[in-house]
Every structure is written in C-alpha cells, then in structure tokens.
Length: 261
Length: 238
Image (cartoon, rainbow over all chains, first blue to last red; front, side, top):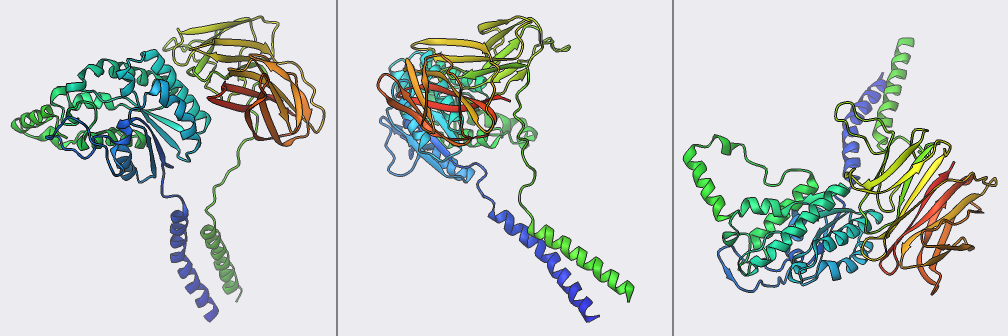
C-alpha cells in the first residue's frame, strides 16, 4: 500500500513537472522569431540627421556618432539583431547594387531591408534603371535565401524639394518590384504623405535641409518597417478616436496638418 | 489483490505516458521526397538576374468560370526551385509573361500534339546589355547507368561566352552561352562542382551538392560573371 502512495506521489510530482519541462523546451527554442535584419541603403539607413527635433532649424544634417536611424529602432521594436550597412552618399544604381551581393553573402540575417535611391535622384538616374537594379537585388537576396523587404522613399522638401519628382518615381518602381516578386513592402512614402500632406511643414524632416529625417522621422520609418515585417498595419488607427466629440476631432486634424507624430 | 495489481499497472502505464509527453517535443513528420515532376509538362529555368519572375500560360488551359481568368501553369523566379508542371496533351502555345502580367508576353513556345513529354524553357541574358533570350527543348530519353547520377550543365550566365565545368574532378565539354551540355554519369553522393569561364579560366562558381543515385540533374548556371553567379541543380529524371 505504501508502494502505491509513492507511485501516486510520484505521479503528482510528474503532473506538475510536465509543464515545467514543456516550458523549458519552449525556452530552448529561439526567442527571436525574425532571425535578424540586414539594413542596406544610404544615409537614410545609416541615420544621418538623427538626433534633431522637429522644431530645430537644420541646414546640414548631422552625422550620428552612435548607432542611429531606423535600423536601431527596428532592432528594439522587433527584438531581433539588426546590422546597419547604410553608406551615406551612395548611389544605388551605380554603386550600391555592386556592393549588395557581398553584404548579403556575409550576413546571417533572415531579412534584408533595402531603402536607397535619394542620391540617384541627385544624378537623375533613370527610373527603369532603378527598377532593374532593385530587381537584381531581390534576385540576389532570394538566391542567397534571404527575404527582401523593400522600402519606398520618404518625400523631400524645402532645399531638396526638387528631388521629389525622382524619388516618387523610384517609389513607384519599388512598389512594382514588390508586387511582381511578392516581397514585403514598407511603403514609407505613402504613410509619409498621409502624415505630411504639406511637405514644407513636415515635422519628420530636418528643415530646411529637406532630405534627411529627424528623430521623429526615423521613428516613423522604423514603425513602417517593423509593422511590415510583423505583418500588421503601421500606425493602426485607435478606435477611441471615432467616439471623440467633433471639436476634439478638429483639434486632431489641426495637429495632423502640423505633421507632428 | 488482482484489482490492486491492475490498478498498479494502469498507473504505471499512465506514468509511462506522462514521461513520454514530458520527454517529447521534437518536430514530427517527415518530408515527402517525391520529385514533384509531372510526367508530361513544362518548366521554366530562370537564369536572368535582371528579370522579374515569369509566368507560363497554356493556350488551352481552362478559364475560371467566374472570373474568366486563366491561371498560370507555372511561376518561376531567378534560380529558384521549379518542377515540371503538368500540362494538357494537345496542340498548344505556351506564353511566357512577366509574373502577374498576363498581357506582357515575352515570348511563346508552340507545341505540336506529337511533341509530348517534358518541355524545358530556359530564360537567360539580361535587360541592360545583352538582351533577354530563351531556348526551349523537350527532354531527351536518358538511361542512367545503375548506381550513378546523371549531370549536365545549362549555361545561362552573362559575361561568359563559354563555360567549363567539372564534377568531382570529371570535366564536361564546354557549354556555349544559352547552350545545354551532354549528361555525364558519375558516382552519387556529395558532388563538388567547379565552373570556369573558358576564355580566362576564371573560377566563377564552386560548391557541393548532395545528389541521389539513379537520377539525372541539370546544373543551371545563372547570373552575371564578376557580379553574382548562382548554380543550382534541377531534377530532370525520374
């Protein structure tokens, strides 16, 4: 009889142990569901202009001395290791695309974000040429087993307003390549336009410099990339807003127009 | 006493089940290692690094009764896995288009009813310099000597007029740009390959693939020399 008690006791012990073992097994599994990101691009990936506030007057966007830009923010948002391989000043169609294979080859990340093209606008690179280069990058990524995440380019303003014609053209090409290849699309430009309907007053950019995002701008881009990779809608609307009285809604609209995030 | 014993056995059994559940946790299920190749069908080998994915449509594929749309027979991306997709046995024209753009036809491949079997379409070249090219052929009947693996090369890499290849040290004849080499038969297992550009003997790709016996593979060489070259084996037979 005492033997039976021991067995009962042992069973109860196991009953409680079982979830613990299962928990331990879960703990052993990788905590990171994303497998790391390689962030490829130019100064907008590197993080030039980060550290400034919306109300500051910035004529020359500062170079960050610490890890900056959207990659470091995505690392926090997704809790996955991120490698920033942005090269300021790089032209995608004539420089970046040739650097791309070696960067992807030497990376163990599962995802590769590509956000580049602002400097192509300076040299007025043909948008078809841009699309071919981007398609090449997608093909290289997938041949190496990495999943590309393509980013459209934020609108410029002020001293760099003239670039918008080109960057918008490149963004159209980014959407097309994403569509044809079924890749993830971080449509920064679309959300940017929603938030900054009046580019001259956009609180996401260093102004009057007009090309590089400020801290709020990099927060914004990071949210778009993180949401895209997580499979959710960036800046998902808050339901409470619908129940707010009319006067408060108007206040909200005013704030939106100021471009504050 | 017997009742006590059976209870005890039941408890031991339960104990065993609990232990089993506590110790288990590995992933279950094995993969289906069937080739996935249809006996009669079509496949696209996409070796063009500048080109978007491609769709192949058959002129005799049935339309969707609701939308009127025709589903592509196959979609192929640069150096990605593809199998022979089943196609109807009849006179037809295969149209190769940009993926998701059925009206954007790149080229067509007409097929007579007599020509049955497996049709391979190779797309190579580039947009910006050499132009996108294609070649298509019906797979030949190949007898694989027992205990060997058959290997051939298709050359779809730009910036190399001819390439040479060797597999576990055994060389194959040089293959011209867009060309299809002859099969060689070697011992299966880990196959080390080495691809060179003939003109300057520059090694453009090397690596190892594990290949099974009594099968035949195409080693497709795609991409662009001095930029990015990819090599991938595709199962031809059985």
